[in-house]
Amino acid sequence: MNQKGIIWLVSWYPNEKNPVAGDFIQRHALAVSQYRNLTVIYMDQSGWKENSTLDKTEIQTIGNLTEIRSYLPFHRTGFSLFDRIHYNLKYHFTFKRLLKKVFHKDGYPELIHVHVPMKAGKLALWAKRRWGIPYILSEQASTYIESAPDYFDKRSIYYRKSVKTIFKQAIAVTNVSKTVAGILEKKMGLDYIRVIHNTVDENYFFHIPINQRKFRFIHVSTMNEQKNIEGLLNTFIKLSSQRKDWELRLVGPVSKQLQNRLVTLKNDIDLSYMGEIAYRQVAREMQQSSAFVLFSNHENFPCVIVEALACGLPVITSDAGGAGEAITPRNGLVVPVGDNQKLLESLLYIMDNYNTYNKNEIAKEAKKSFSYPVIGQKFSNLYEEVLEGRI
Image (cartoon, rainbow, N blue to C red; front, side, top):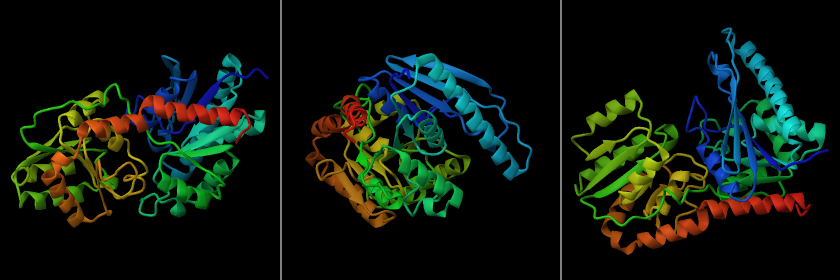
């Protein structure tokens, strides 16, 4: 067997339909590519929810990273169960055919690395059974936390059984947070799981000293239920009744309903919202801010927290999942999930004690822990351990 390199099979990845989907996985890939040649294969899996005529495969190279994105056309009949079954069969058949082409062209990989078990993990399981190629599994979802709307234990028996099989057959498993890793160890019956955190591009996210006109809180997220935007806004309304020497900037996609809500708050809060902006611009917005705030209901290990820290911002976050794992008394505060009063107290504390936070040191510590070279090296070391039979 002609073996060559490592291939990633990813269930989430930035693509033409959703440029920010799984962008944290792409950043992991860019980090790893500093140490190894890497091929990432993604097949869009949104077709069963909507009619799609997009039928193409794209190949893009960024340094040592080769990205292959494939889009599967699908026409729905309107019969939900039939469409789901038909789509899954077509998805797996097409993905298998694509893998065979890649293997024929480049040789069989030494190792497959799966990011998010469903659906890519089923392809890795197939490759293991057919060619004996071992695979590593990384999970990034917060679905294993009980407060998540898509909580794992409430999913179908078929889904849970499939995911557990994918976990059990992996030669090694990683997660981005200690909290979710601990849950997975118990839930999946794993002997060991390694924590490798999300990463941040230090070329964009770094500290710049600024003279601030007004204390600025910044929040960056997808602005959905998970992020508890309503709870966040209600707390800032309370803060506004106590003092006015601050402003709040929101960055992320704003629905029509949320936009209407924000308009009604203009008289109560010094508020601005940017909508969805490019990754580099997120860095610039953070660099022009005073502190970052995230009040989520459930999380794994949010990229935005380490990005804010890399810009030197003290962070206030809820203890949802692993959201507070990067926070120490030197770089921020952690409040209980949904505790508006504790969040209010923390906002006031950050403003009153802002000069005790060393933004330059916060940024340096973040770079030491979460930069591309650091996280890329951790994955590369894991590959060596697996390939040398030490795991």
